[in-house]
Length: 280
Image 1 (cartoon, helix red, strand yellow):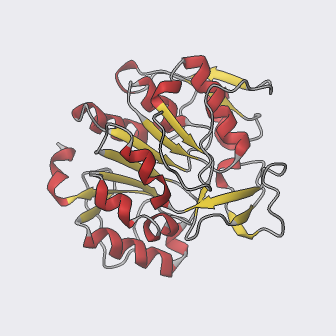
Image 2: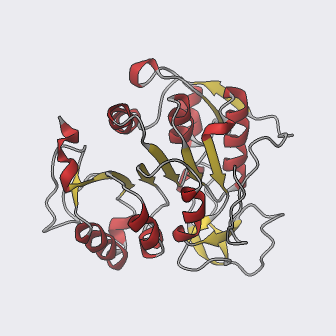
């Protein structure tokens, strides 16, 4: 990576650092156009890990939708916010696409490091080990959910800032803090996938400069947690509609915005109005 000026709070993770832990890493089944990759999972008691350990691919339908779009836009890259142990990130890298992955939980992002080494795709991935929040440099406490590590969410401000020794204490950045990282890439068009357990609001509230600078034709958001935080949900809907996005179920079926809490699916694909032909 070129030398860039970053906020001191941005944790750029070294993808070439040796990983001492003995992670379980598995080769996935085939996805879009025979695409395969490696993911390094947790143990079988973790919901998402158990699927890959049993030769399944979590959210394969959503992955196929995004990679169908990537196939149509050869120059498009991915921003993966809430990357978990890197399912979307690793498949995109396997497709020879660039990825900016953001994941705050070190046991997850260390698994992305190891998987990227096994697949030799470190040059495709920029990995940022932070949580997205309204202010940078805060220490936040994560909930503990060993049976579904991907469902861990922000509990509130941490009583200590010892994030270096406690993986459940995470450091925050604003989404706009990654703008220097974006600028030093050759990409100005990105797909955006956001899965941060109901706190997606903070990405949009803190990311206006990013949205002004790059073209994001499709935003994939896990919606059902956000739907239970009405004030956050209203902000996100207004933010996206003002920027010319339309909510869809699968990039094709347009959703009814008059009653958001009823009838919306777990995942929503927001499409820019001028990109509605993506469905075809």
